[in-house]
Length: 286
Ligand SMILES: [Zn+2]
Image (cartoon, rainbow, N blue to C red; front, side, top):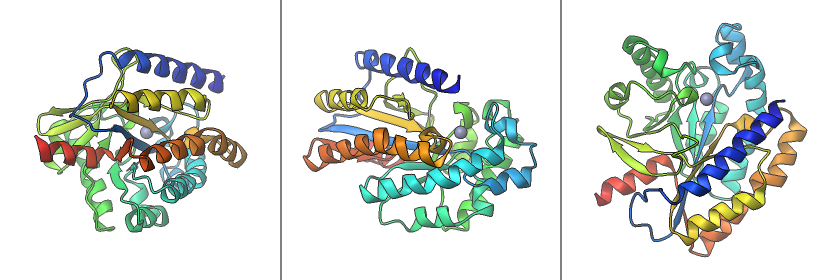
C-alpha cells in the first residue's frame, strides 16, 4: 500500500515536473544546468524515540514511530554521506535539531567532511510550523541554534517539517538565508525567489526508491539542455526501511543517478549547488 502510494506520488511529481519546465523561472542566467539536492533528516537516531517516549511520533510520521524512523535513518544517513562524499557532491542536509543534542557522530562527520555540505535545519522536534505559535516556533529555533553552536556551526538553510512554511520573520531573526518552499503538484519546478530578506529555494522534484532511474536521467538531461535549475529532495528513509532495500535502491536508483550527474559535472555541463551556495551566488550577482 505504502509502496503503491509512493509510486503514485513520484509519478505525479515527475509528470508535473516535466510540464513545469514550460513555466519554470530560471533564477539567474545559468551557464550550465544546475542541480541542488536537499535531504531531510527527520529523526536521525532511535534515541530520540526513546527520549520522547512515543509523544512525538505523530509529528514525525503517520504510522511509523519516531523510534522506527530513527532506526532506519541510523542506517541510511551514513550511507548517503558515504555516497555524496565519494562522488564529491555538496548537498544540503537539513537536520532535525534534537539530534544535535543526543548524537554527534553524524553531525561531526558532516561538519568535518572534505565536501562542503550545507548543514541546515529541519525543525527541532519536527512539528509543523504553521501549527506553532510565534513563541513555540521561536523556542524551536532557539534550541536548534544552541545545538548547532556546539558544533561551531550556524544553520543558514531551513527545511520546514512536512513542508509547512510559516514564521519566516523568525527565520530572518535567527540568521537564516533561505528555506525550501512547498513544492506543488501543479506549479512545480525550481527557482530561487526572494521572500522578505530570505530566499525560497523552491524544489522541483521529490524522489524515492520507486523511481525509474532512466526517467530521472532524462529529466537531468532536459535541465542541462535548457540550462535550468533542478532541485531534488528526499528523506534518508526514502532509500528503504531495511538494510537490504536500502542497498538495492542505492544500487538501482540513487548511485546510478548521482554518478550520472557527476559525469555531467566532470564534462562541464552541470554545476552542483547546495541551497545555501545557490543563494550566495544569487546574492553576489544581484
Ligand atoms: Zn521531515
